[in-house]
Length: 286
Image (cartoon, rainbow, N blue to C red; front, side, top):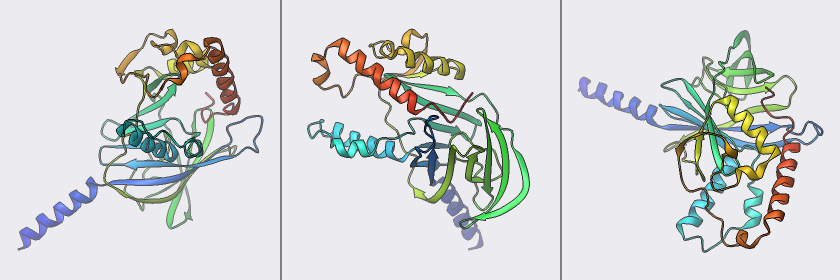
């Protein structure tokens, strides 16, 4: 009987650790350098399993779910434009951390394609003896310099994870709050609950694997010449490694076919310039 009890306990522990935990963070952003009063706030998920974690926008997850249902039904129902507009996100990237190999993969869309790179800068934390309480958790202070900003994090050992939102992690506990010194960006843990598995995000277009420095160059090139990224080849003429292809020409419908190319180019350039202005104070300054 004792042996059976030990086996049952072992199976219970294995099942508990096999589950995925979803941590919901409130993300606050002042992304427009010219207008720091324009404060954007939205929720993001950090899903953590035994093998990896994934950080991404709650709104993106909801939009993906709506689009997936629409494609599965043959696309005949169309989209509720107001609903989709309400789910627009300022967090267009996702961050995946491989807990086994200790690698951090960043993904973001440029034009038609999704670019991915492995983060090559280690997080060097200075852990303080200062402690406090945030919500129900006892937390400890840590500081680091990353991406041209000074960051202060508060982590807890009450939860068995050495992880956190965005690219942050590597502390002896889960990050409950992290904020830069200027107060431009902050991530605050709101709640957590169990889910069956880490979400699968839709990836329209090709996924292109690059180095971080090349990703930055491509971002700058896109701001200057967005139309070079919208051709069938995409990539802005960049020599890349495509790790996955899924067409990249989905959801076009018939509307775009009769549009004047010059008008399309003008609208695209205006939209990119407008977005660049609104994101003139990015989370990473260097």
